[in-house]
Length: 177
Image (cartoon, rainbow, N blue to C red; front, top):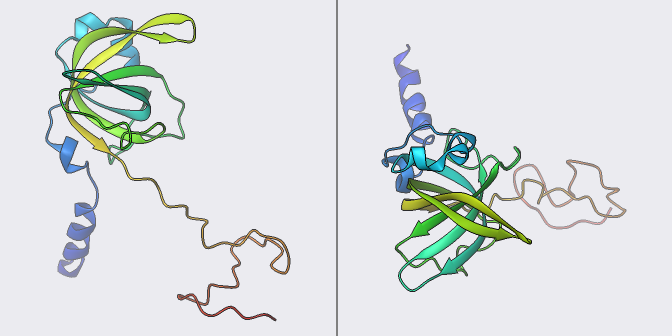
């Protein structure tokens, strides 16, 4: 390899990987389907799972967070473009503020499978995996990559990729033609 390519490769490789909160936690590659078929046979197994928060319920000594499971990508972020596989509950000894851990936010959890727990969905009671959290990473929202595009009414006619405010690398003053 050329020596002048080594530094950019090292810098770019530093950008990939798991968040520090869940990076060093031990984890087995167990799918949601494997665990949900027979939860008790995987008790005490360390996992790294993620998904979208449904709700947070605070009790006297613990917090319970219900999550829709999504598989993780290479960086540990839930892949929301793939369908959710089911629910699981994360038990945390720390207080999880419902104002911070709000509905529809993405999380990745390093945890140990503690067993199962009953949850009511509509009028039905289901058994879902219960995880005891060792680390939780709350993901920031993706910035909207279409914010600079103008899909509005004339005079811009909604041409994709066209914005009268974008002037080749900077946002210049607004000019009326």
